[in-house]
Structure formats: C-alpha cells, structure tokens
Image (spheres, helix red, strand yellow):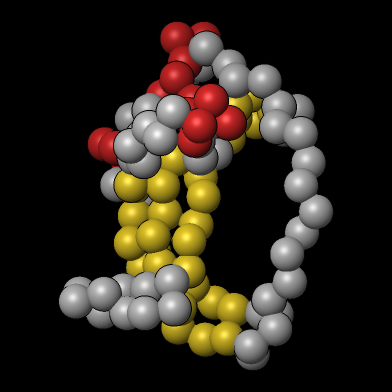
Length: 98
C-alpha cells in the first residue's frame, strides 16, 4: 500500500452531466491532487471534477468537491499508465439519491 488519504466529497458541487455510465454501475470522474505543502487549514489533498482535454486547453476553472489530508504513506506511490475514458451518460436517464 502506498498511502491512505482521507477526504469527504461535497455532493452539492458535483456536475451531474459528467456522470459516466459503466458496465457495473454509474461513476463520477474525480481527480485527486496531493500537494507537497500543507494549506493553512491543515490539508494537502484536493479533489476536483476531472476535466476533459478541451476544458484543460481552454483553462476552464476546476470544480473542487473535497479537501483532505494524507494520513499515512510508505513513500512509494507509482503512476498508472493512462487509459481511454468511457462515454458520459445522460444524468436524466439515471436515478440518483442527490
């Protein structure tokens, strides 16, 4: 295990149009960023809605949904090779508790 990171997601900040329909359920694409420095609030983790290539190129503002902190690490975290993202489902076609 490389790290344990605690965070809570603010469901009110989720853009339901970005929900991804998968083979085993519906998913929401999130990006977790671990920072080298601790914020004034004691956090060093940010979680935001994953941006498309077009959104990144347009320098669109990120939608932050959580902050957190690394609570344990063994110092060995490895990057995983990138894969293609599945298609985005229509939020109106799904039943959500929020």
